[in-house]
Structure formats: C-alpha cells, structure tokens
Amino acid sequence: MFIQLTIGVLLLSLVTGYGSLLQVAIGFSAIVVYFYPLIRAYFLAQQLPKDLEQAFGKWTNTKTKPLDLTKLLTKIQRIERRSLTYAELDGITLKLDYYNSAVSGKRPCVVVIHGGSWVSGDSRQLSSLNNRLAQIGYNVASINYRLAPKWNFPAPIEDATAALKYLRAHADELNIDIDNFVLVGRSAGGQIVLLTAYTATDLGIKGVVNFYGPADMIWGYHVHTNPLVIKGKEVLSTYLGGPYEQIPDKYAASSPIEFVNEKTVPTLTLQGTTDSLVFEEHAFRLAKKLDQFKVPNYFLRLPWATHGFDYHLYGPGGQLSTYAIEHFLQSVTK
Image (cartoon, rainbow, N blue to C red; front, top):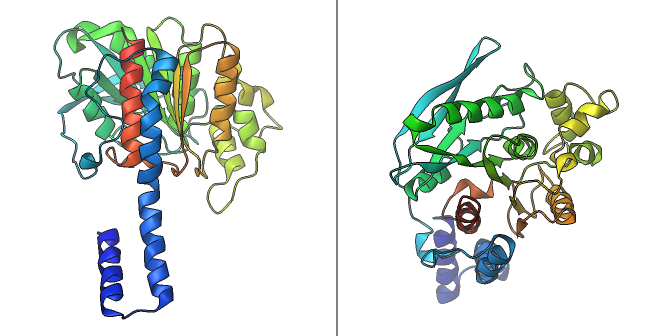
C-alpha cells in the first residue's frame, strides 16, 4: 500500500508540476528501494536451479519456479494441526504442533525448531512454511523446547532429540517414514537443528536446513555486535550459562561447526547479507568446513535480506528459500 501511494504521489507531482525536486528524488528513491529485492531475486532465480542441482542432484519437479511475481500477494492455505505432548522434562510438558501430510502413506517428516535467542518464541512461529510443506507431501512437527535462562544448553538439544524419539516411536499412527527426517531451524533454532543433526547419528536424520543460525559460537562471542540491535555476548552467556572466559568448553560443545566431518548430513543454509543479528560470517565458516569434508551443501545468500526475511512466504526471500528447501527435501529424502 505504501509503495502504491508513493508512486501515485510521484506521478501526480510530475503531471501537475507540484512538488520540489527533492520530493521527486525521495519518491524515486523509495521506489528503487522497494523494487531492489525483486530485481536481485530475479537474477538469483535464474541461477538457483542449476546451483541446487550441482549441490544436491537433479530435481524432478519442473513446474515449480524459484520466483513467481504473481504470487507476491498470495495467502497460504492453512492445514489443520494437532498439539501433541512429546515429553515431560523438569516438571514441564513439552508439546509439538503436528501437520499431517496431504499425501497418504508413510511420508518423510520435517521437524521445525523456532528462533528467539533461546529465551523466547514458540512452535507457532512463521507457520506458513509448515503448511506449505504439508500440502506438498511432508509431515511437519514444529516443536517447543525449554528456554533460557531457566534452562541452559544442552536442554534444547535434548528436547529436539526427545521429539525425534517420540515421532519415531509413534511413526505408525503418524504415518512417518522413520528413515527420512529433515530438521529445519531459524536463528537460535538454526543452531539447535545443526547441532542435533551433526551429533544424533541414529535417528534417521537425512538433512538439515539452517535459516540464519549461528554455527560458530566461539567466533560469535568474540565478534563485536551493535548493542542497540543485540547484545551478543549477553545472549550467548544467558544460553550457555556464562561468558566464554569461564566455560570455553561449553562454547565449543555448542558450536555445530566443531562437529562437521565426512559423515555429516547434507546441509542447506539460508542467510541474508544485511542480517545484523546473526552475521553471514557464520554461514561462510560453516560452508567452508562442510566443503573441507566434501559434505553436500549449499549456501543461499540473499544480498538484500535481513533477519527473518522469510516472514512473508511469498516475498522474494520467502519464494527463493522455499524453492531451495523443496529441492533439498526431494533430494535427501529419496
């Protein structure tokens, strides 16, 4: 609505002659800023299918496009979800939201873990992707986990593992193929899914999707962040139970990058260049380590995007990341 109003006012100024050169310049600048992501996304979309095929193999679905401008205002269809209790830990009940696949039979299961700096958030966060994946044939389990400061690391990793064990134990009634789990996490949830996928070797995990999550907790602690945006050291200290100087081993133990080896599962990372909460250096470092061990991986780098760029599933970042995820899922859950 804002950009339409801006264009209208700008055209009126040009036609009537009213408005200063400064106002016209500001109007044009607003339009450029608005369309910049679409332009960059268009060029990325031309290369993305080839890049993903090179990283993970050919995708049999030739109908889906990486970017479709006609979908920008589309609303996602909602699928009914169930709330299930997957564990009782430390006197609290841990629940997950379960979305049944729209395709019948035993299907792969995507486990989604929310962000919130390990101190907030819940399983309903950014649920549009959950609905989309269920529509195209995947079971989806979006979990809640114990939060800091009451519970420190490794509590969320234990909870993710407990959720996987629950889903495996109830696979028949939930129509889950226990050999085909994929983990998806955002921000703090990215760290949780990466570490879980890289350390839990017997739970049928076939791949992991990391939305702008911290992969190197040691580096992350020492890098300077803008305190007006996020107090990085305080966030990590709250989650891990203290500063790096006091518990360096815990920082290493919580760093997914420390656990990459030749048996690590395929990894898809989605990151915005302008992210001021989790710097893209985390993604670069992780990709370099994965390449070192020849682990199939791809880093989708969005030059215009910031933290939470996938809030709108059919926005430029949402469409490109969803396309990449669907390709990835088809490739690793054969």
